[in-house]
Image (cartoon, rainbow over all chains, first blue to last red; front, side, top):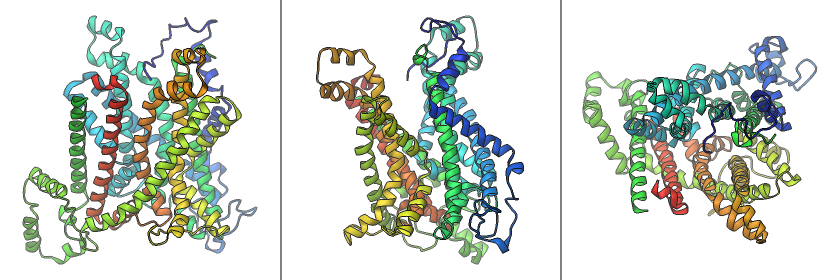
Length: 298
Length: 318
């Protein structure tokens, strides 16, 4: 990928003229699978927001008399080992997953993009120091790094978010740095500098906006990854507190009753797969929609 | 090329150095006393304050942090990874027992992901928008999506518990019982490779599509060259750089996968040891495994970089 900046004034390759937003939307919704992804994401966000209204039971409420029930009209997905309603826990699990995913990816993106931009723009020693540290962090397999940080900090929702943010950050730094190295060679940066713009002004006003498209795609893709990693940590039992409904934790809890109640493990995993699929497909669609080389083709 | 190699080697050494600093700092940041790295919690509770102070001097924990780092790093490079806090055995013994197991599964998964992924990607690119492409792309999209540990649980339910075709979990060396070993490996290797094979297919497909649009490919077609020559000689050669990058990415992916998959299938490899040691707070193991895994990734990146230089002359001079 070379220069992926979007230049709003460039319509030469796209006659007849259509607005940038319309074109973006048209390319985005061109593939059915991307539309499916969008629908999944929007639905799950709504489910997360309105979880208390949708969930038939309180996901924390124990009911020892009705433990390990098979799916029925009262409990569509049955109940777990302490009688909690599986459907309600899957629904509330959407909240945990999306919350962890969104917050950790936002942190990772903000810090990573800033570091990458500083490294790429200033170059020299700053570049060498920042990027070598990022290389070293990226040398650890992501789940192992997150696992170590979560263990260091001691589990819990906030600490899982920090662990994931740190593990995801180097990817953003590397991507942004590569972008900046390309973008800063452009004439408009030289022009801005020649009229006396400060480095800070150039970074904030010219560099960021021109590096954004691939970052947006990466953020979308990483949301799925972050949610998967959170589920992995909860599955291993080093994540969010045990009573909080998490899909990873539920999959692990269900393993003991695999033969009698496979739904306990199946249902949360299916939800997890759905959300990751959604983010991956939307990411794919965004990549196409933001790719200037495809401009004018649709 | 020599300057290029030397530059890469220096860069690689710097990254490894930072990796050791990160691990060192992480271990020092652990809740509680760094003495816990050398003496287990229960023991420190039994010792008197004077005895603890003596131990601190014995292990050099009274020295400045930077001196401690060099002592520690020196030991690591001599292969002394310390002793387990729980079993008291030297860490390297257990690690050496487990490396072959993780490698066995990892190498198999890696090879299969390459053998299936690359041809599948090429076929998809060549037969773009046909039913073959649509089918394989959909499968690949599902493959990068499915949580591998959940797939493991599904497979255990279906193939081991329900159908009873395969053993539920565990690991046997192929040298003791090859057939049993293979049967036990089918599910974990499948779960390990599913992500990598899907990623390979998708990336090879898009790398090939990119190349197939180029003018020189049109020229090759218009010259009347045969299909095989155009695809393999003109197109694939130019798509090989992103493919090599991909193979490098496979290493951290599979090592990370081993952490979860070995847990699902109760395979006594490095990944399982990492999780168990974190749970037991047996930090010398955590330290050793993270160093080895990071080292393997740095090495893989170095190989990829050198391959770039070898494949693409432009890289050498930039």
